[in-house]
Image 1: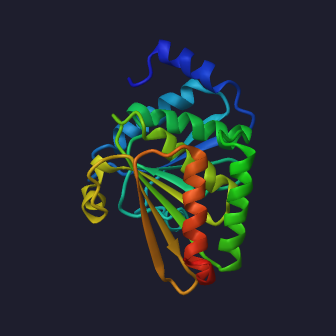
Image 2 (image 1 turned 45 degrees about the horizontal axis):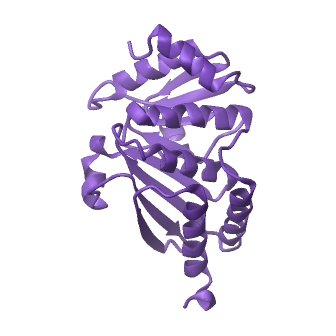
Amino acid sequence: MFINEQDKQEIKKQVGNLLKPTELVLFSQKIGCEYCTDTEQLLKELTETLDNLKLVIYNPLIDVDLANKYGVNKELPAITLRTDKDYNFKFLGIPAGYEFTWLLNSIVMVSNNQLPISQKTVDTLKEVDNMLKNNQAVLELWVFVTPTCPYCPIMTINSTAFSIVSDNIKAVNVEVSEFQDYAIKYNIMGVPKTILKLVTRDNKVFEEDIEGALPENKFVEVIKHFVDHQLNPLHKH
């Protein structure tokens, strides 16, 4: 058991009522996935704690079309959420430890349309979204975290909120100790580490690293500057 009775009461108090029926969408498999069974159990217990929340489990080897739709491949477990619509964010790995906060916040964001970011940040994101849309580009926010990092949830929660505001921003939150390939590829020495990855219409990729946790206003300004710098060459200094 992951969630005891005391935890259940605390979670109910923290989350409150969920307004929209919400699905936890889990991609999982029994073989070759160390944390899939634990993740399944954790999410199942959470759905037993909160009303209006249910768990749907897919196997990417069987549910291939859905796995492609959500951009899920061999990195499992992979979690996203669904209400009456789909979202551009996912979490790779088990959202345990401090990252359980990400899970609860994400549920509230999609079920209650309640984003933990300021209107000013939303307005800046809309500017970024217009730049991306006009250039047929997509921005991916790759946030690398571990469950024992107290400063990490601010980055996973904000990247998720940003992806909800902008159709052209995708958030990929990764529990990096489960995926050593990513740790090596992106040279993850400490967490949180965020990679901004801009993919242009002709499939050129531009990247920028952010080390450590940033407050939301600083995070969105770094994103805006990066996107503007890459998509509007005349603005380059």
